[in-house]
Amino acid sequence: MDLSNLSKKEYDIIRNFIKLKLNNKFDLDLKTCQLSTPSSPKDRSRKLNSLSNKISSVDYRCDLTCEIFKDFTIGVVIWNEMWNSKEKLNCLKNENYIYQTTKGTWKYTTLT
Image (tube, rainbow, N blue to C red; front, side):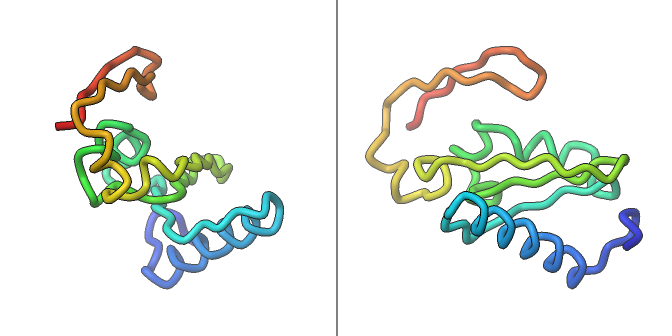
């Protein structure tokens, strides 16, 4: 596959392969997977791996985030169920959450 120009079908093949491997190895029930590749927009992987985006945007909420790097290795983040469902977040209103960013800095956010 040419990582600089993947088709939707190829994205789906990669996502399904990763979900299948993880489901078999760890007995996980992973339904949704976001994928970023070297051809993705520059800030896509940062947005996919951001807890604040998981909290504030349904577009980035998922069970699993994967990033394919230029050396063809794949990084995988499995999000716990609290952050992958908007309904589950509703009961956590007005709570403060502290988290580490992908840059290594610490941030906090409040669910409103």
